[in-house]
Amino acid sequence: MYRWVGEGIGVGPRHAYYDLLPYGYWGLASILVRILVPILIIVFIYREPIANYGFRLSGGAKHTWVYVSFYLIMVPLVVAVSFLPGFQRQYPFYDDAVLGWAFFIPYTLLYGIQFFGVEAFFRGWVLFALARRLGFHAIGVMMIPYMMIHFGKPPLETLGATVAGVSLGFLALKS
Image (cartoon, rainbow, N blue to C red; front, top):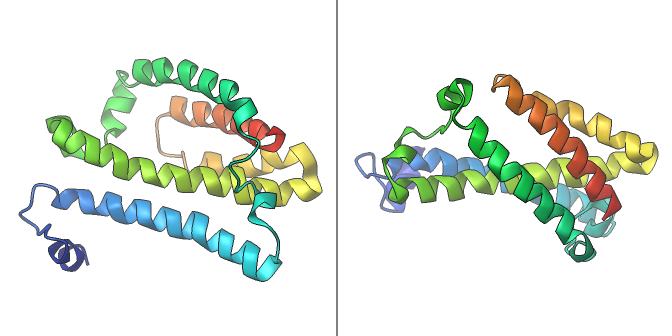
């Protein structure tokens, strides 16, 4: 399939960016499965506004300072742990990302797209659906599968993802 799609867009097996195609598929699948499918279910099956499930932009502005603070705390931590041997072995998934900006930037953008899907799915649809019955306890339930997608990664990442997931889940419900 990579060859067929890749050649269709001018990125055949000998093209420098051919090995980036799986990350494009991953990002696209994440958006389709984790965002579009839940939205379609919410709208056409549940017949509810998607805002009830966290899919909204309004209301977030007053909490911008909290998200910016998280970001400013996390970036130095992520940079620091990126030098640890476990993280060096795990990342980047795309080996050519280390060859320079021409490879790093497209990889980072494609890889980053799937994070939108992950966040929308776990801190949106899953969390808000569970919160209707469980209130803030929904955060703990949502965290189990979210934490499990980090199994096999460096233990520090799994721990960090758990702390970040709980914090972001709390913020999602409050904002």
